[in-house]
Length: 254
Ligand code: NAD
Image (tube, rainbow, N blue to C red; front, side, top):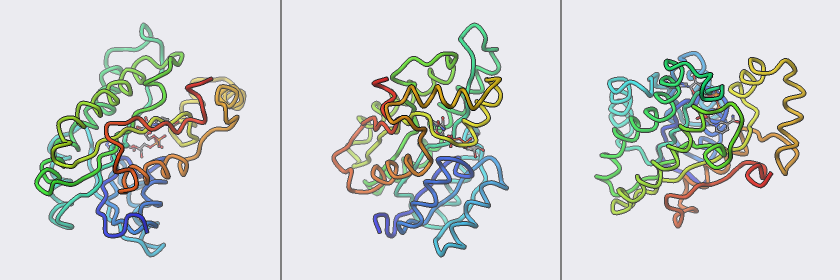
């Protein structure tokens, strides 16, 4: 059990990568605080964990809303006394070349994908600083490193998350808090399925062209990213600080 006794908060864990990570972390002995905007999906994840013999609770919160995030962190601390690992995973897609993106859509992508990393970190960090211990995992993306067509707003947010990760690492290293980033390639989740359905006439053909872009020749699965998150959450990665970790099937070399 690589996370035995650890208390873990995962934002956006009602679906996709967050859900896959919540299930894996629970199998590895963690108590998982499942967060999502969507109550139904979040409750389902927590219930699946409990039914499999693991430990989890669900707390509904919007990661863009300070009062909501503060209340979530207070509830988690009241219940478990601490948070050992924070995985800032919640995020939304943003489609379009820059001139095609409407200002309100641009702002929404910024809010969820950047403010949604800032706020949970802001309220969890004082507890980690007090205990001089913690691991924070921020969800970036391979688009922070490679140019992808029609992903202007989304790419801007994921580049910002990578820069924020490095800045956070410098500030919190004196408190023995590690802050690292995950950079996945295309992972087949509801997020990607919706994107393919709404952006392409032929989603199957789009999947084939994405596969060709990745050295692996395959799309990733939530479990692939969950295993990388497990490494960053555990002490096995204790010498990784402020690092980008690629789980992209080699897309950055494509
Ligand atoms: P997903 O849509 O399956 O899951 C995201 C979850 O976040 C959803 O359950 C959603 O309800 C929740 N969420 C959205 N806004 C929220 C908010 N304001 N507050 C709380 N929860 C909120 O998506 P996914 O593919 O699992 O993506 C998870 C993360 O991984 C995102 O940050 C995404 O940008 C990133 N990512 C995904 C891929 C991919 O190919 N799937 C690649 C690189 C990075």
